[in-house]
Image 1: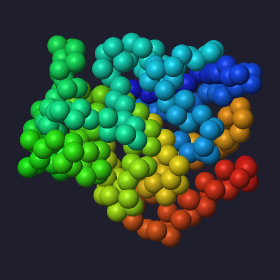
Image 2: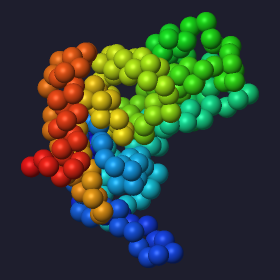
Image 3: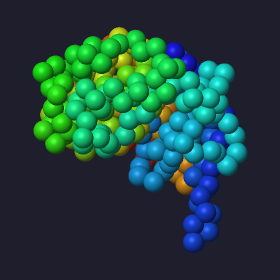
Length: 250
């Protein structure tokens, strides 16, 4: 497990219309082993922040640390697992082959906690080892992508709306799977979503990002025990998030 520290991060993009400042002096500390969810309107910089934490973008100013390491070093050590909306599976590889790919790339550095067979079992795809991506539903493809993300045994999971493109029933099933797997491994999770219900289901802490430049509007812990099935209680947390997004939270 690794803590994530985002320290006075400033980031901007140059556009034909001029400079677009995404963040100014943004700081956030995420405890090791916690499940933190970032919510906010489109265009507020949620995915940009995730890419900075992953080391895929360098901030204009400020720094990020995963434990004592900068993101580039954490990536080199294979401590970071990344999952986005698109499964990005190789069509000529089977389920087993796509998962194994994560171990083949610089595999000499990796000491996976689980075998490919165990990962397939973990994400509920036993019996589909030899199937190709075109033979799988969208939800099954995302299960393969999840197993591939977990294959190197990352200490940090960076999840950029991984289930946004799925239907409600499939998304619900996968959220249950993610929560179960996370409780087994207790990685540090930073999860981005537009879905407030999803945030209330998953988060130890919700960070509400809003404004231009973006700032942390508010953050609050959700102490409710897991698994969370009380829709009335979930609805209360969703209401608080909506208030915060509207600027109504203190």
